Image (cartoon, rainbow, N blue to C red; front, side, top):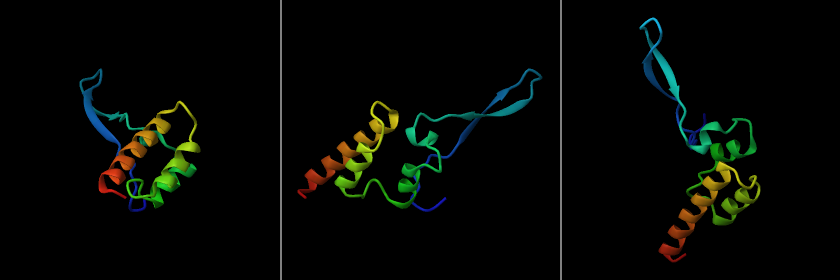
Length: 92
């Protein structure tokens, strides 16, 4: 993966199977980026651009291109609100 990727790493935990053997089991994080297909346009954007530093109009265009009512759109809207608050707090 390229530098600047915000995809969370896959996590595992252990449990005992029916024979008493310790097995690794994946923990599926609730982060919306975890399930993002690597070949989709948004994944490429996050691989090449830092969403915490991109211009607000760029972030807004990503939101407009994302399907309404999805976790991804909610994540992007939350990120947009956070970025907007930072911009206004700095007086830019």
